[in-house]
Amino acid sequence: MSEPETPAAEGARHDAVIHRVVAELAHPQLMPHACWREGFPVPMPALDALAEAMGLLRALLFPGYFGPSDVRAGNLSFHAGIMLDRAYALLSEQIKRGLCFECGELSRSVGGACAERAQHLAAAFLERRPAVRQLLMSDAQAAYEGDPAARSPGEVIFCYPSLKAMTNHRVAHELHRLGVGLIPRIISESAHSETGIDIHPGAEIGERFFMDHGTGIVIGETCVIGRNVRLYQGVTLGAKSFPLDENGRPIKGIARHPIVEDDVIIYSGATVLGRVTIGRGSVIGGNVWLTRGVPPRSRLLQGIPRENGFENGGGI
Image 1 (tube, one colour):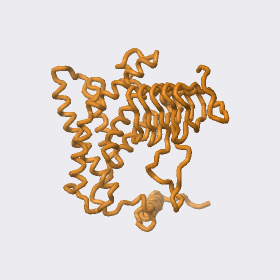
Image 2: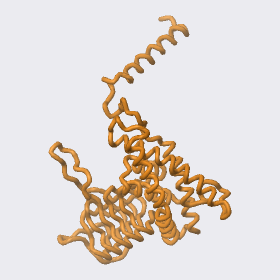
Image 3: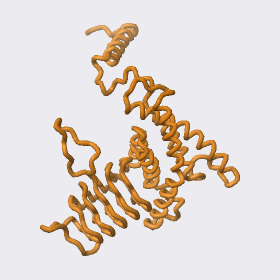
Image 4: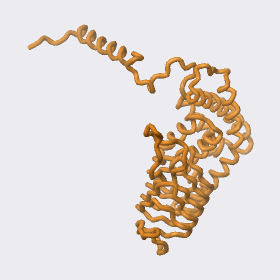
């Protein structure tokens, strides 16, 4: 039976293991290229800074609900000015980092072209804040009207994961439209992790949009959703298939997700795939699997197929 190690010997063995693992982790030749950003003068976007920026934007969009709780008419302008100035500083810096990450040019520095463009983009986004608020208020009103459990639009603003996810999406989508790199995706994925609702920042969503319960909803990059649309939990608006290039890689930037026209309701667990159109005023039942478009005012239960399309009529 061997003698137990002394504390000194055990400590030395522990130190040797740590030194060996650190040497392996830090060796450039042993590190995958995607994990290593050697020589970049601008750091990666900071998740905590973006979380702070979203908190400030949420407070600017819904003062009194988020941010300072003592906001009133007499001091709102003071609070708004402070928050807006801080949000601009955070967004400018993080947008710059996202631009530098995507352009990959080592020559970009704090005073370079990425920084100048980031300041312009941050200002352009903040000028869109009133329009973003108007869209979000329409979303809150749609949720209040569409959910008998909601006692007021204010309850929706303060409590509902649908509106939390849509706040992030409305912000991320505006940044995406402006050409901001990386940051919109981080903002969207933050809401995804918190709410279970996955919306790509490229998706175009009209006013009065409501996701009842919301958990498990997926909305793809090139989706186009009209006004007054309601989705229930577990709905997927995804891609059916996509062409590959000569190297077998997916071709980027093509329209591959559904178009959902105005006044459509899609119930829980339904899956709609491909660049198909769900016609205005249609109702798609729960757990339907749909890969073909349906005309306006369709009523589709369980995806009953016909040779020339789907069964229309009937109630849900």
